[in-house]
Length: 389
Image 1 (spheres, one colour):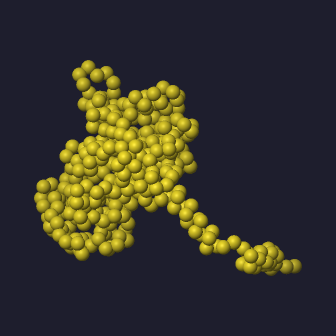
Image 2: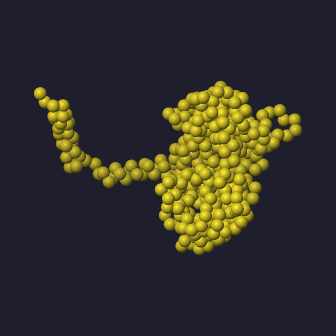
Image 3: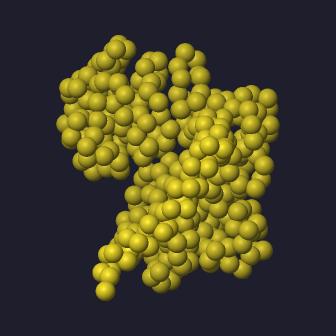
């Protein structure tokens, strides 16, 4: 009797013979594989462009300090994207070049790209963007980011918790769900400081009225006298009152760093597991000196000298991300997310002390070699950094 191994070998030989004949025919009369490879690469580039040229076609007023900038692509078709993703704009402001990521607030089927921008007090980039008129053009990355709904991962009802401009990726999701169908019941809880600062309030309330799968609540932290709606902070008591049992739900949290830290802590104290929580930070904290681990002997306004290998030297404030200071002096490095996630802006610390945000996302191998992500790294002494890639 033949062994199992011998039978298997004979079966394989029988199977491989016609494949060899097919391969010989393809080699002698088959297609041009270089041509096929070129077509494949062109298709990938069209679906996932690394850069795009955008033209501003409209500027829609949302509040006194916020507008939605509507763009069309001028160097090709808009690529597909997933609700919750963002693009990073490369901006020439004065003598310096900087990048800023903005979540896409339009849905993928809209045919245009909406970026919602809120004027930041003493801001550098947002005032520049809000001053632009239709016809202005800007270079952008392609859509990127992983703050998206994954049906296989994010099962069960969805709870969206946003603060301020953190509503923007959720508007892309809600518009998409409304057009294509809700994958599960969705509850939105959106926090704003003032009643006249609520972004997209009329729209998400209208969507909730039209779709029984969606409920929406606006929370005002500084309500006017006589206000009877939800007020204060989004805390465990409010979440429990709105959501009820947190078991089996997926939570998405988006907004300023301090808002995320507070809300995530509330969720964890309620018994929500870490794997149930997705988060997307909108920039560094307002006051990095209040972040856990900040060296107590370094004051926010303290200044340090930073030597950038091959570029020169500059002076930085302790409470300013290294990337911001480097860009201002024309020594910037590539950057996309500006939240520590993408690693595009990594630099190696040759000497000196640096504080990195806890969510910096630096790989262990990079940490061992002294790399930091400049967008979420702060000088705590005089430094020498090497931006060599």
